[in-house]
Length: 279
Ligand code: DGL
Image (cartoon, rainbow, N blue to C red; front, top):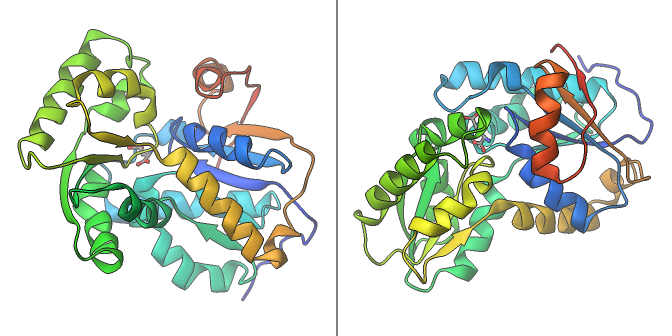
């Protein structure tokens, strides 16, 4: 049985467990400023990275239902953990029941499509949350699309908590970023490109650059996802026509708005007036 959601044009929904998805939203808005956006951060329950498959799936499904309920016809899971653990089930099972005409897209596939054009040594490093790395989603997708690429993965369980707790510039961040980069590079000295496979990690970019060996490409997902979304909307006019235009962006969080707004403002470089919501 399908749910009777509104058919009016509506903002593009962008979801993350917390602040990280804002690094994607910021780049999407640069490339596609004409659309309206509705951002949802499940900050009250972040991080997702250490949570079970089932829980990440349940939380993500709640978020998708919320955004559909707000009218969104297209939802971007701007979260690798949710893309790795929930996207396939939602696309293949839940959409049919919720509304087969709506779409949910993730961030892993566009990143994997792009990496084949970037690496020369064909040795790629992936940093991600424990959930993303243990799901092997990157290994599986890269093996399908670029069978000649060797994938070297490393989970960074402390990086998201550092960002969520506003410690990205502190000495704790130096310690963990250096340690994790050394651990990844010790797996293969030929790695020439590292995917930041978590949307929170761009907030640690200065430190990541500082400790990454010179000449290694650091791949941020924001511009890749933005370009891929633009292509998607060109190829799918039936969805594009249902994305409202006006350039507005509304921010929702499951945390108290007053805790969300100051950090979110740093991510997007402008003042964020957020609304507290429950899923
Ligand atoms: N930003 C998310 C990602 O891209 C997840 C962070 C988390 O909640 O652990 O994986």
